[in-house]
Length: 506
Image (cartoon, rainbow, N blue to C red; front, side, top):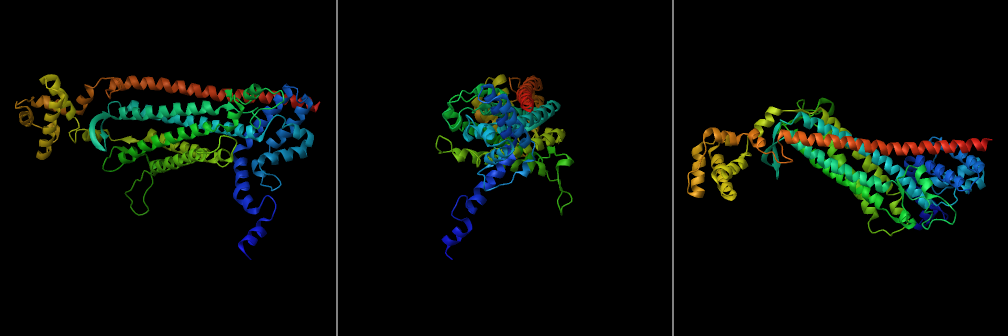
């Protein structure tokens, strides 16, 4: 038998062919069931109540429809299995509703509505819940970073540029920098949430409807902040997906960078950080190993989340500006997976950061190595010897080179070595006392003289910490208001729906 005959024998000559079912319809159905089931019934409720309020359905009709809707909504989603008689979950629910309340009533539920605006509404409802959960865990991570930073305002450590020891800073200063990066990610996600939390309902297929509907009442019933005003935009505009994906992509890219730092800090060579026992694993053969696999998994999950977010962006790229499957069922799971993986990363790293053990003494010793305070030598030469900075920089560089050749760290450089370096650069034997050179080489002195806004000085770090703690509290209050708005809208809709059901029962 030729390949063509084999395909026809397996798939038949009518829709849907077995291959089409196995590769598309069944997987899409399962995704709809697993992700959109609850959101679908929320849309049904809000739409039926609006039709009743607008006089398009009587209270008795609306109540009877809602009884059927509630009966189906109470089902276990796993009971819904793919059936080739129905193209998707939407038509299966409508079919079961017809069996329950009759074809006419079930059909009237679809007045002034399309799968187009309904589908986008469901995606937005599910996506906003994912975003709120992600934002909650971001706030937890920020709290952990701020708490540990508060404990380590005096913990001196080396900072790195180009992977090389650069200058002394404090662990608090470093963790505040991570926090501020995460805080900006938080703001980007809030912006995405505001774009997502807008109602497309009432757009119908894409040109609205000839029925006298109220888009604002549906918006309020579902807890949306606004409507997508232009009905074409409501159906075609996929930027709510792009903004979400981009925000998640940036978040996980940002997180991956400092997670990589954390892995380096955990190495025996660095000995800066020890991950707590609940988050390490041992080797199957090397009993001495304490592998920080929680941090490693966080790094790989962050990459996987970024890849899922990038997949969503790529799927929208170069697509027509209209209703297309590219932005619908095939794309949505990528975003849900990206957010779910991001949440796993945030939860893991929050736990790790809250429980890490810091070797303060070892960090302080490392902050004295590699001549990383020598910028202060150049600065002091400018302030106290009236040299230009570039000349002072050359002298300091000469001192570093001579000390390296002599096998000395900066805190052991004798005054004569500085005098020789200055003589070579300026023809003047400029130097300081041993006590002065020791002070210049001290990492704590290096930090103490840096009191500019944003510096690692403990007082300035404390000011920044207090400011960030207040901002975090404001962000948590904003999150609570967003959750309350959705919950209150759901409760109002439930009350209205129950009244209509009671009317229909007589």
